Length: 262
Image 1 (cartoon, rainbow, N blue to C red):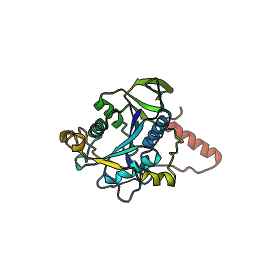
Image 2: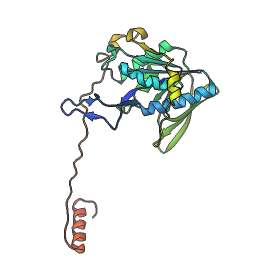
Image 3: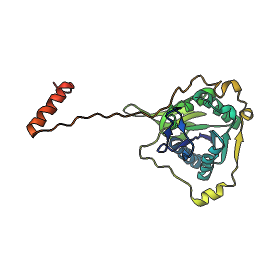
Image 4: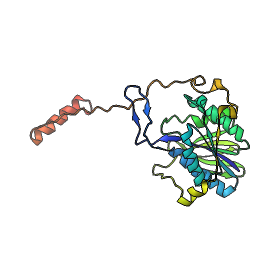
């Protein structure tokens, strides 16, 4: 069983700020973390690896500092780490990103299962995983709570309105993972981190994976982000004064004017 997990380094969501003039995310000085949904997908992949054997490869696309999340994955038990890093990738939307990652996975080759987080917390699009499956022309199941392998198939519980749906997919397949609201990711011990230092991280360029320039970066992105901004919350209120009976009459009249009651 050969498993590939797609991971991403993202800004810590509690620390993100937006430049009010440019409308872009301020990343300087902001701590970065492994995307929580990808962390959960990685944990599921580690369980499958333990149950079935085989090899677990993590792949990420980003600037050189994204190697940090790959090293984390290696210290947790991944066997191989690959970083797609090239100026040609800059400005890629989810379509171009999924194309680049799919080319990286094709270069890895001989994969049975691909796991992705449901979405990245810095974008919330939930499009990259399905895009990878589209480019690779393999089955996909999205928004899954868990995944296991039985009889050569991926078995999942997929979140749907009102509950879950048990589904299967022929391998190779791509699964995107959601996570429980109370999820807390596992982290490696000092010894695990120390042992992982001997595991190299491979860095591949666009040329290394055979990605065409016309499908990358701004040129290969059919969508554009017009603006990113922090929503403003304006709260207006009114203070009533008077006796208890007067207050009750005022509140009642306010509710009628607002058509909350008749």
